[in-house]
Image (cartoon, rainbow, N blue to C red; front, side, top):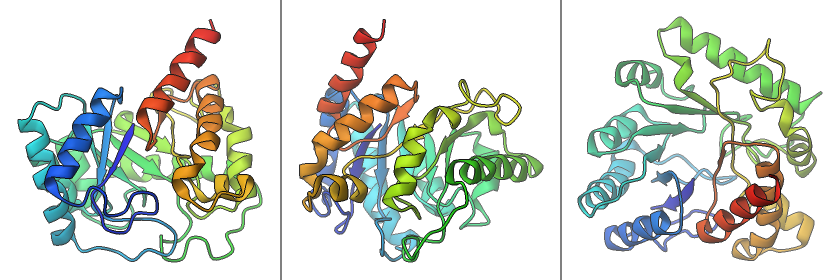
Length: 269
């Protein structure tokens, strides 16, 4: 999954693709570099970020989706938003799925939209909000608690008619987690994967998504303050996830990380 941030303030590439022309060019480049899915967002959810209203997100995201489709973008598009209004506008413009970092909790209208549209959707675990999530997060057992969250969300969404066979689960690396929590999730990633985890706890149709790209914990471990300098650490995490059978890996440097995944696939035969 290739990341396209059409925002002025994303932690890694804020402002680089804020214009429609630059964003569409990058979308087509991401596809050419080997992405299977394009994830486009008009609201930064980095630690400490503040919410962006739906109208502004729509203004940032929808023209890019429309123009990218007009210019022949073929891969599925995921819209990264917590807003049902933004998700609906993006789906109408040519997006295929919804990536909601709140786990479909922030906007009461989001579950109904997903139910009506039947779109695939990503449920991510986050403790708190982007503005507060890194304020001393605590867990007794981060893997067990994240896994329980997925079960609870699936139960709640199924109760209002959402087709949970369309759900993708994301443990939310860096979202309300310390470096130690992130490493624990990665060490025990097989416990989060439906095909390797406890069958009694998981619907086998839930793919797992991991989003480690250039995140702060990599910078802390490798002493790299510049986000773009964290690609070597990202590659190590991507290789680890690929070996563990993670179905989707969300990254900035698609060409490099696609190469990592392909080498792992050839080496693991």
